[in-house]
Amino acid sequence: MQNHRGFTLVEVILIILLLAIGLTGVLTYVSQAAQDSAYAHNLSVATTLAQDLMEEIRAKCWDETSTTGAACSGTVSASAIGADGPETRVNYDDIDDFNSLPPAGNTPPQDSQGAAMAAYPFFTQRAAVCYVNPGALDTCVPGPTDYKRVSVSIEWSASDQVQLVSIFTNHAL
Image 1 (cartoon, helix red, strand yellow):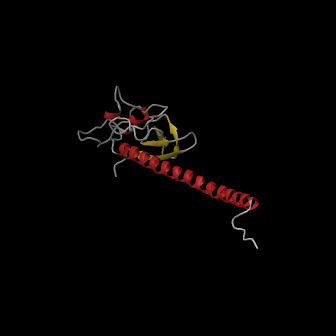
Image 2 (image 1 turned 90 degrees about the horizontal axis):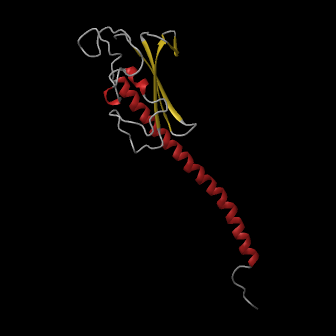
């Protein structure tokens, strides 16, 4: 009697077919997990960049026109939205100066000194500032009013962005 060891050609083909079907399913999950991980990373980076820009804006004065000698204090008369004169990012001194960021945004984002953050080449930084009526905080008005709405957004694709919105007021606490 002969002892046959090994696999027949049909058995080998069946094993290859079963492995191919099984690995296709596993690789689909691995691919989706990699995409989800990249999205989560981009979301985290964009959120941090947006928070940093909003904090930079929050640290600025309400407006340039103060009635007292101390910086950022006293009653102010609101002025036009946007940079005052030839200001650049490094010397923005009030909230509404940030409305002067380029309409197309900064790609890559810029730091508080106006230097490009080369580590984030696929992110775009935008800011918009407008006067709002206290009864409709989402609606920009010609102003001036005692309320400014600041919207900061960081985008990393045509459909993905993080947006933060804050309302700043000209009232002392």
